[in-house]
Image (cartoon, rainbow, N blue to C red):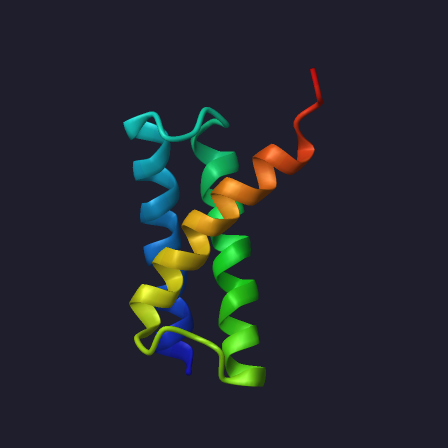
Length: 80
């Protein structure tokens, strides 16, 4: 369990960093990494409790990180 959660955090950190450097998001490097790690933790514990997931832990981490990056910034942005 411990190596899986550490791998999830590392993969989520990479996804946050790469998404910021590639221009996918414009939150800043640290906020993007924090959003990705939070989403990955949430999905990791949902997978543990309910067994919902994509099979591999790495794919779960990538999907949850990208999902968190899409949902969180748009939710908190003001409407124009």
